[in-house]
Image (cartoon, rainbow, N blue to C red; front, side, top):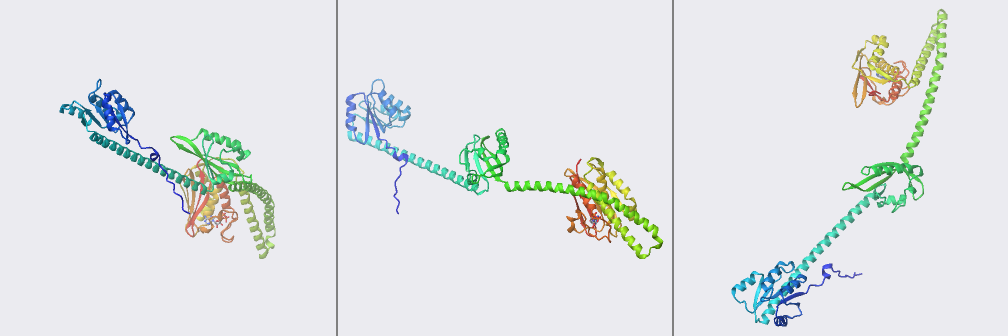
Length: 525
Ligand code: ADP
C-alpha cells in the first residue's frame, strides 16, 4: 500500500516573509503628500515622517528598503539625519535618496553622497523615474530578505541534521551498551548516589524484579543486611573507589536466596561520583562447594588426627611386646646354640629380621605421628644441625667414604629436633642410594622470594621422574627389601616436617646421575 507523503515544513519556512517598508521624510505636508501620491503601492508599506527626529524614531523600530530624505528641514536637515541614521544599527546600510528642490550645486550633491546617499533627486521629480528607483531598492531588499531567509533555513537544516546525528549516535551507543550488558551473565544495575535507578540489564530485571526504586530490604538476605549497610556506608565514605561484597540476594522468581559477588564501580565525571555501576555475579555454586570443602577438610583433619593418635598408641604399645620377642629370641639362640641345626638357625634368622623390620617400622611410625605434637619453636642454627647430623652418621659416612660439603647455612625459627630429623633422613637416603661412583653430597641454602631454599644434592642412583608426586607418600618404595633396607616412611616424615613449618619439599633428579632434594622455610618462620 502506498504511503501518503505529508510535507513537513521547517520552522523557518513557516515564518512569514517580511514586507518591505519605504520611508519618506519631508517637513512640508505638501511635499509628503506628493511623495505619497507617487509612491503608494501594494508591494510595500509606506511610512511617513515630517522631521529628522521622526525619521530616526521610525528607523529604530523598522527595517526600510529605502529612505527618501528631504534635504531642507528645520532643526535637523537631511544631511544630519542621514549621518545619524548611519550610526544606528538597524539603518546603517539602508539606502538613502536625497530629495531637494534647491541644493543643486555640486558641493551640496557631494555632501549628500558623503553623508551616505545612494542617489540625489531634484524636485520637481519625474514620478515614473522616482517610482522605478524605489522599486529597484524594494526588490533589492526583498532579494536580500530571501537570501537571509534561505541562509537561516540552511543553518536550521544543518542544525537539525547535526541534532539528528547526535541523537542517532546516542541511540547507537545506548543500544551497544544494552547489548553488551545483556550479553554478560551478571545482573547489572546503575544507581545514582541518591539511590535512584538509572539503568538495569535484563538479568537484573529477571532476577530481582526491580525496575525503578530498589527495596534493598526485599533483596538482601536478613543475615547479610547489617554487612550490606556497612558496605553502603563504606561506598559513601570512599565514593571514588571500587567496593566488593559477598551476600545472598533473593530471586524474584522463586524467592530463593543465592550467594552473589556484588562489585560497585564508581562512574566519575569532572572528579565527582555521578553513578555506581553494580554488577552481581552468581557465586552460589562456588560458595556452597567451598563450604562443603571446609566441612570435608575439617572432617578429614579430625579423622587424620584420630588416625595419628591411633598410630601413636599402636606403635607405642607394640614396641614393648616386640622388645620381649627379640629379647627371648636372643636368649633362645644363646641357650640352644649348640643343639640348633642349619634349619633352626635359618628360622631364627628370619624371626630376628622380621622383628627388626617391625621395630624399624614402629620407630618410623612413632616418629611420623609425633611430628607437630611438639609445638616448641626456637631459633635454629641450621649449620649446627648439619654438624650434629654428620656426627650422628659418622660411621656410615666413613664406611662409604663420602665427601660432604656444606655452604653457609642460615638461622631459622623451627622445632630443633624435627629439623635434625629432616636433614638426617635426607642425608641417610643420599648415602643409602649411592651409585658406584665415589659418593659426593653437597648441602646448601639460598635466599629467594622471601624464603630460604635448602638443597641436598647427591651423585647417587637417581630417581625416575614419574615418581615425582608419589615418592613423599607413606610406604612408597622404589626398590625391594633385598636391594635396599627401609620402611618407605622417611620421605613422608620429611614432607610432614616441612609442611608443618609452612614450607614445601620436592626433588629434581636424573636417573643414574643423582638427585637434589629441595625444601623451603619462611624467612624467620
Ligand atoms: P626408604 O628409604 O625407607 O625406602 P624413603 O621414604 O626415605 O623410604 O624413600 C622412599 C624411596 O625414595 C626410596 O625407597 C628410594 O627408592 C627413593 N629415594 C629416596 N631418596 C633417594 C635418593 N637420594 N636417591 C635415590 N632414591 C631415593
